[in-house]
Image (cartoon, rainbow, N blue to C red; front, top):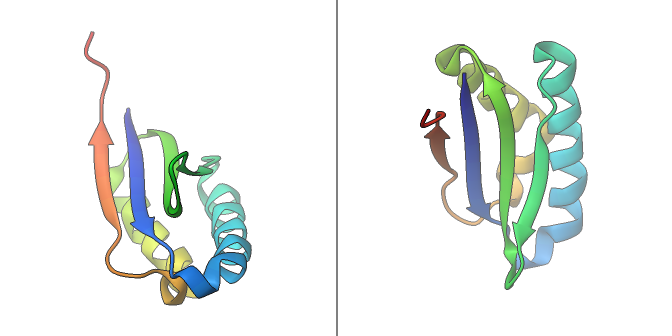
Length: 92
């Protein structure tokens, strides 16, 4: 299983809209995949946000579903720049 960490910067004037869109996206992902993602922000930078998706079995399939949910939620329009995805697996 792989944990996905997706981080990005939210446009300063769209934080409220981004939070609403992110909640819609997380709910859609959970409804379709059963994976309950979490949304966090940097402690020292309120505009840098991170989505965390634990225990993803099929990263390619999940990423495609995540891209669809991102577009449908409107979150993409609230992001300043690119989204970056990191994948982590257990060490032992």
